[in-house]
Length: 403
Image (cartoon, rainbow, N blue to C red; front, side, top):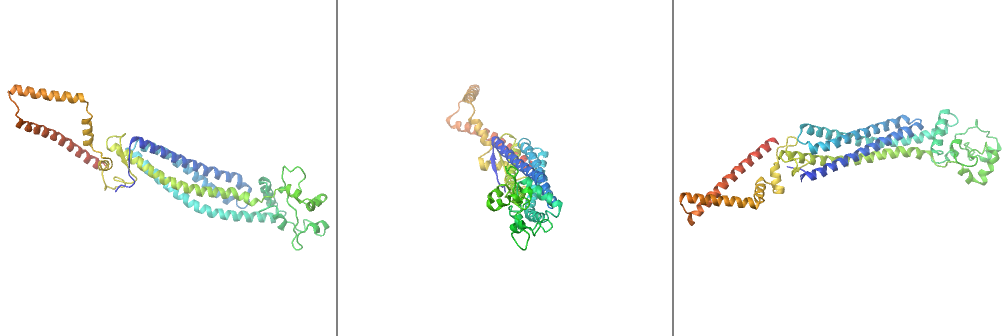
């Protein structure tokens, strides 16, 4: 039984090798994207985190390493494609092809497993970042480390708060030790009698390119306090109003989702590459077995001679079945394509030979005996054809033993 068989000429094998190389280049490009995006998160995103820095570094170091593994795997595949096309009969090519296919399959399986765990890790990191920012905002004036982290996140990413700048108005990050709760200004701006919440925002939320003074603290900027009431739009124009959570989570989430999608595409491409490479390799190998490396030959995904399988049709039988291929037919075509001048010379030589034979023996060939002469000539031709057929049978037996 032969699976996925195609009859290919040398030109078709070269086209198939070009497809092979193109798919390998696509895999290399995907691997470069994996490595590049992982490096971006490690260099640009992880340093601004506090509690999740180690987890983020671990995840994206692993994805980056697998990206480099993909790059080297399919760069080798480009070399394998050329060896399958030009050196298919060598034992080293067969060993390299098996090793490369096994390593590629192992890489794809590991990528799929890693993608599954990366999705779970992405959810964990998102929840952890949200919790960390919330804790940092609550301890902004109590822990100098968290203050530096929050200021760095807000200033570098031009963001403010968790989801928006108004989160600072709702979180209890100011205490009675930081403000005079008996002050009339505090009583005026206080939004809740139970919790000390004020429309005060850290300086790191200010827009760098705002032409006027940043309005972030009506307690300390008492001379401008009326603006918070009369012109609230000016206050918001001086601040970065977007939240920081999405800005931090976006590159991490996007990179992991891209990794999962890339792994899925790589799995599909790997299956196609395996089919293409098998057909290319077996067709080039079979053409050498047939004694015509540049000729037409069958190629398959699985067939006779693979993994010790000895069933199914031989190469010659496949060619006779699917293309009407036979050496007898080629011999007949060679005879029919023989130049007319050579035929005339042969016929003239035969006639001269007969005339000389008749003259020598003073014999005439009666009409009844002409049938005997023709029969003798036909017997000679059948003997020659029988010897040719016997030679072909021996050749087929040698090919089957070699397979």
